Length: 322
Ligand SMILES: Cc1cc2nc3c(=O)[nH]c(=O)nc-3n(C[C@H](O)[C@H](O)[C@H](O)COP(=O)(O)OP(=O)(O)OC[C@H]3O[C@@H](n4cnc5c(N)ncnc54)[C@H](O)[C@@H]3O)c2cc1C
Ligand code: FES
Image 1 (cartoon, rainbow, N blue to C red):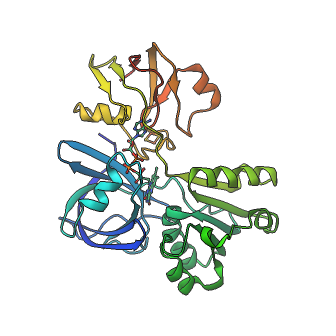
Image 2 (cartoon, protein in one colour):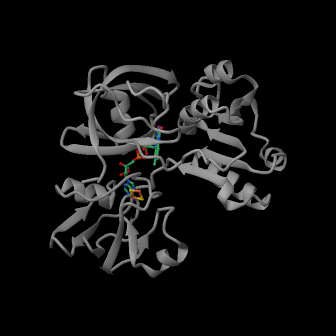
């Protein structure tokens, strides 16, 4: 199994909070409270869509101090493989589903003297809980939040009401851009930088921070985007002797789960290292989509993160130490 505890929850409330963004409030079933979490944590939802099981991670954006419910906000993605569409179209008030215990791969760094938060679009979600925690702990922070438009951005107005001048908003359709160079240059020593948003935005922030000389340990990011679909290929499992076909829109992890087997995972986004698997042999090139293995490890071909990485060419085979 995932190695993580799972809980049954019921959808208690749904709300459209911006164009294409739906908020869900989840309450526990069969227990009084859900585990407490820290700002930046996520949970993995298991969604039974007829004969398909979809498992997607979502950041917990509600209060970390309220164990009576969890809240998530989900953007309906245009080329969805099913998960975000399921959340939007099939989950209703009263729906029941399983979620994993919270895991935090994007926590507040306690060494920081100040916290500079940069969000783009749906990347605001982990910061919602983080800011609540920073406020409660009286830690200094400021948020710079870029959105496509006022109607396309979630929570910006409520955040301004709650946190005042610490919230800075930028709307693409008003030709407003986060003044990143200036922001990165004018921070007191000991400031930590956090970024979550579209891949291009994260790359921009990381690149500017590197060029401005920010120490790597002061820079934190979380990527949401799943890699694109690819060619179909076959995996063989050395320990169980099973052979499983991986479809173009499936990850190796999903194909293994669909075959009724369980393997460890935490983030399902190529970041945590939990699903690292040894490659015994392989007939084709591996497309490494993770942010965990080093470039040298990727080049050696000895390991693969099965939640996001796959084989490049149709018909190739890989023997995994599973
Ligand atoms: C830690 C974390 C927190 C997140 N928090 C949020 C949030 O708060 N709000 C939000 O809207 N989104 C969030 N996401 C993104 C979210 O999990 C989904 O990726 C997003 O909703 C789109 O999902 P989808 O199923 O509609 O579409 P897609 O992005 O098209 O599909 C995702 C599916 O593709 C599968 N997949 C992965 N790699 C491959 C591959 N190489 N080949 C084929 N299939 C593959 C995955 O198993 C996953 O089920 C988060 C992601 C992460 C990693
Ligand atoms: S589950 Fe986290 S890297 Fe694969």
